[in-house]
Length: 340
Image 1 (cartoon, one colour):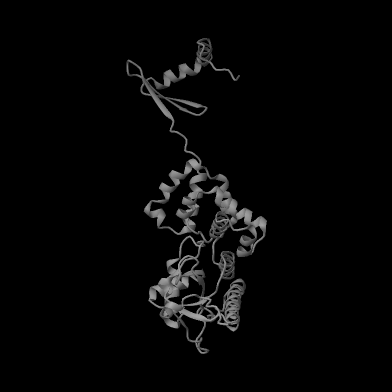
Image 2 (tube, rainbow, N blue to C red):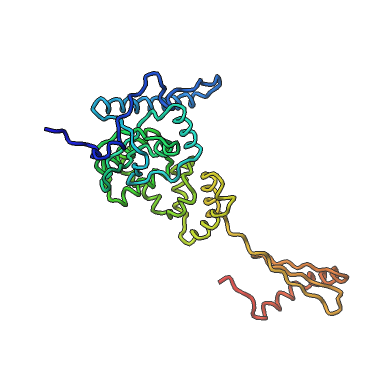
């Protein structure tokens, strides 16, 4: 019995052909570790080794897939669409430029994972590898891919687990990813598997996104150095009435062009800024003979009289000597306010 065509593009074989096997002599892009500095901190070494280990495991997983018949093929990049759920706020232009140069020099060593598009025959959807797809598209190359028949749940879990392996999504991007999955009615089990976290952690991620308007999150950006605690604090102090002013503030050129982490700090500062006190109101009185003038200023519970001109000292002394009588006259005027 004929084997079922798993990728369903037999009518367009020019668009899909097996790729050449990986050359043993060519390095895996991004896998070779640079020589460590003599004074490099232990933590930096551990992080580098951890990243290398993750990349080795991904290559081993790819080799296992190929051994199981998951052939690496080359696809026209224009036929590959994004995943059903976006996981990034932005694609860092510097990192993308570095990846473009890496692929230009060494070729695309690590394939992306795609599935046949469920609604458009002859097209494909990415499970993971959006940046690699963008890089080869810039270079005008075909994209090396593994094609699998994936359900929506399987695609999302593969996408999320690949992001976890790279560990380069920021907190708010992970929170948005979780909220978007919930909005598309994915089960909590699928969301937990995709993000590699427990149910309570999923709830905390989603709760942050529900309290902060999406327009504000997108205007701030991924803020890679801002973690759960700070985003939670922002969610707690966020007021819907403050949104228009914050978006206007973030639209200013000098703010918009600042790093995403700086935009977060600016928004947090705006929301926690104490309202400025209104300027003290000053009144001026001038005697008809111009011999003395008085400037009166009220500021909270303080009221100041400043006397000026020739009779200032004499008039001021007279006021001081008659304060008791003046206060009694004030009380009898009926303008006095009681503490009750």
